[in-house]
Length: 208
Ligand code: PRP
Ligand code: URA
Image (cartoon, rainbow, N blue to C red; front, top):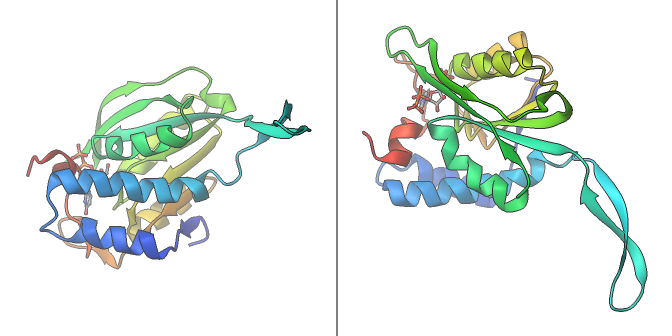
């Protein structure tokens, strides 16, 4: 799985455990998803380019930096919304596009219902966020959509990845790097990731 980068950190392992725990209520789930995403931002954005700028400290002139890359975040509705605030805390000038997809419960195929993007996808670092990469159908459709809009530098940040989803993306979008907090064992016969954390959207929004 060469396009997958699992971000290993003790605090990430702790937070995934809280998200997995079925006794974690929505209010805590949202807080911990945001915190866990913050821990991943560092790694997902490690290669962002910088501009050098001259500045003066109270003591002397020195070199400082501003980020050069434009960043566009794209949450997959609904569950990706739970990861947006963490990114905006670190990259407040990022633009946010939205893509609405849900999985048909029987076919497990993604059904799209909404899309709205800022301009300049072609020159931006596009970070697709969705906590769950299961069959990979939703992420693959979202990436196809972004590529149709000329996006070239796309990466996916999820929380839990299934081997099936990683394999699909490797086949259909080998240019897209996938950052995950954990790689789980497999999908069950209903397409849920196991051990997983259940339906991320339901757990974030209390819609079980
Ligand atoms: C979940 C999740 C992903 C998708 C992953 O969304 O947030 O978008 O399933 O599954 P896949 O890899 O098999 O496509 P869901 O379809 O439940 O929609 P929701 O967030 O609106 O509940
Ligand atoms: N979507 C989820 O929210 N959870 C899964 O386990 C699979 C798809």
